[in-house]
Image 1 (cartoon, helix red, strand yellow):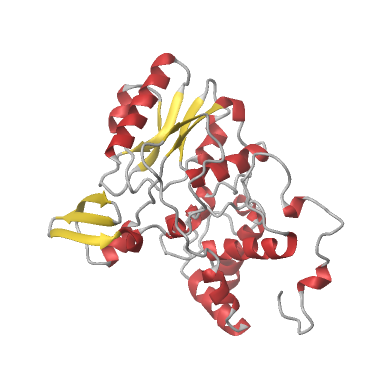
Image 2: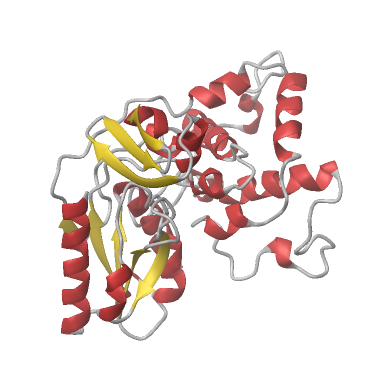
Length: 328
């Protein structure tokens, strides 16, 4: 991964020095090895803190909404899964495509520091990826894990290694593909009784502290002003007061991004309470695939989504329920 980082850093410097772009969006070093953060680099000197490692899981697409409106072009490093979100933002006219230079980069799967710590590693100082193994160095010694055991959830259900948008590429190694069924978690919920399912979500959503991290990081949540920031709503910028508010914030958000969510997994990745929010979105995706035909948001930068298009062969509302009144 170090060779990829050096190549990315070198290319970023070239783009800035030539004046081809006014800024580069990538990742910079955080306080610890495992917490790099998205950053905008406008000079070659600033690239001293540039980093790309196994913990650069953040989807940089949303930062392009503002960046694409600024003078000069913006270069951005996008992993394969990030390009789906990028295409969706272009499709919705939230990102000005001609103002963006996409550098498609390789991804070997991103790591989840929470999983690493839960497996016994504490005071982590460095993490080295060794093929299918991960070596974790800490103040208390070294540990080794199977890489699959410590990958981010979204990487366990990777959509593939193909970039859906690119102006140039930096790929130095073959990228792996995972074969996990991303709907297995949804199917477990569907197998529950309504009461069991309600109890599951009631328990999970009760953890919400309304930090808005899921909304703020979500590329599909790109409204100029969010309905939840309306000062007349009574719920703007406040913690949940009732069970109703706990549930409705996330349910309404899931409805708002339905058909547009690319399943990038950012909502669950940034949640400080570890609520599996991706399961709500995947339920919508699974139902859309069932009712309207298989569809992947962001697969192309144009066209309509199943929920914004009408065809005479579309499923009739009555067919959504079977004879027993159960959801199809």
